Image (cartoon, rainbow over all chains, first blue to last red; front, side, top):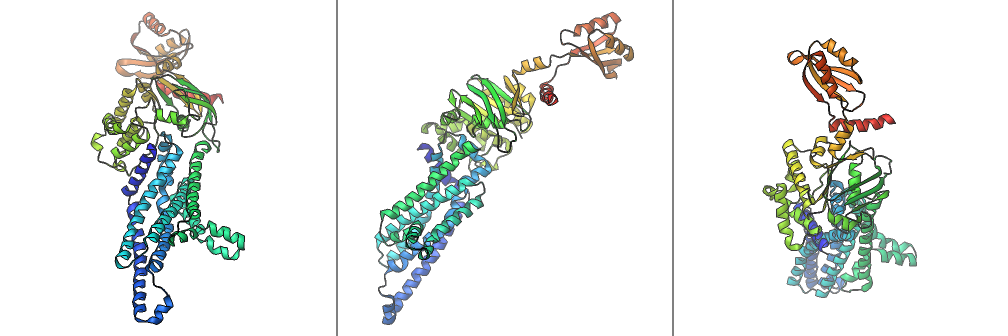
Amino acid sequence: MRNFIFILLKEMRSYFYSPVAFVVITIFSVLTGYYFYNMFANFSTISFQAQTDPMIASQYGVLNVTEFVIRPFFGVLSVVMLIMLPMLTMRVFSEEKKTGTIELLLTYPVQDIEAVLGKFAGCMGIFTIMLLLSFPCMLLVAFFGDPEWGVIISGYVGLLLMGGAFIALGVFMSTLTENQIIAAVLSFASLLILYMVGATAAFVGEVMGRVLEYISILSHLDTFAKGVLDTSDVMYYLLFTIFFLFLSMRSLESKRWRA
Amino acid sequence: MINVKDLTKTYDNNARGIREVSFNIEKGEIVGFLGPNGAGKTTTMRILTCFMPATSGSATIAGHDVFEESLKVRSKVGYLPETVPLYTDMQVPVYLTFVAGVKGVPWKKIKGAVGEVMEQVGLTHMAHKFIGELSKGYRQRVGLAQALINDPEVLILDEPTIGLDPQQILEIRSLIKGLAGTRTIILSSHILPEVSMVCNMVIIIDEGRIKAMDTPENLTAQLSKSNRVMARIAGQHGAILSELQKMHGVKRVDTLGIGSEGGTSKFSIEFEDASQFSHLVARLAGERKWDLYELTPMKMSLEEIFIRIVTEEEMKK
């Protein structure tokens, strides 16, 4: 536990000592903020037109800020996460291997699980800061409109779980290579495939289609964005995270007997 | 304290590694690993510090097996790798606090331990600097500091003085000597005087095998059982040379210098066996009424012994 805390603090600190944290957090905020502006501005234009023109109003049905701004916003956040989180996780083990500091880390009385969890939690810390910085957008919606807070909370829970899964996969990829770029490309590519695999579901028959649908990392976010906390979706992200953290541990462990 | 038995490590590419290395180190000893580059010093140290496993054989530190009870071993060992890998983006005290934390220094003592160890290695005035800004010598000190911070029973230092300037080398050496006593220290080096100065046991290792293991004094005495003597004699060079060559038990005589230092000549006289022989030269000089200015048994330096051990092996092949 104690080692976990020290490694977590060290990881968080090194993100802020190097400009990585600032760059990733800033760009994440700029991108999500920009999309939010577009969606919110679009919504207010539509609402304005609907007020004056009943034709347009009937075209859109019920104009609901949760439906038109918040739910799509979570979708956008997930895409930006998909791009940014591999940049965050690529260094965790690769950098230590490249600079040789792993030699000291592995000869300290630290268990592999503590090292993996500490580094995972360090990334989660940075990611949580990123998510928190997108929260003012919700406050803005609440200031001008009347969003459903239940949806907002379940959406953020979903994003946090999804981010955990992304980070766990990234940490694992980082244990495989000492090259940070390879680690980033591997995590990005595998996340992208898991993200898009749902699209194939339509062509491959019913059973296979449902399997692919379930594997797809994106489809599980939908229920959260609708304000539903479904245990099967929560379990999907948790199991995904645990699975890749377990693989990371194994990969790290194998360095000891494979070397 | 450290028991190593038949330790063997082979790499996939068949290069380097070590073969059947065995030694015992008692508590409080300072042991020097000596060997050319690629001899297996670092491999041995990496196995002892649990960084990599051995292919076969066993090693225990303070009664704990390095493979089975790795965590216990790691908490007792302070390790300084050859390349001194440090987190360059951290400040010195922040880094040392992290190391103290993961090495199990009690929460309340961490701050004190960091201050103490920085004082000990002479880093106090570098407290505000990032490790990346430090010179090689200071990085080496940070490396030593992280090895020492939890006051480990065993210190394993891989080339602790490499890349330092002479002043720093002296400082680090005296620091290491000062650490001895209660601690057991293994250090590797290819600088021989360093090992003979600091260590009370030397292990010479080459091509993955132990070639010799003894105290520096014994090693010198045993291997340099010098059968050569240097004599400086005044007089006619040719006559003296032929007389010396005729002497009983002499294998060969070399001239080291003629007519230098006031008409004296220098000879190196090699005898067939290594028992007492200097007096024979003195006696001869007395009989012939030569003026004998100097008579010194020629000892081999550790360097020569080392080269001899290593090259003899090659010749046997």
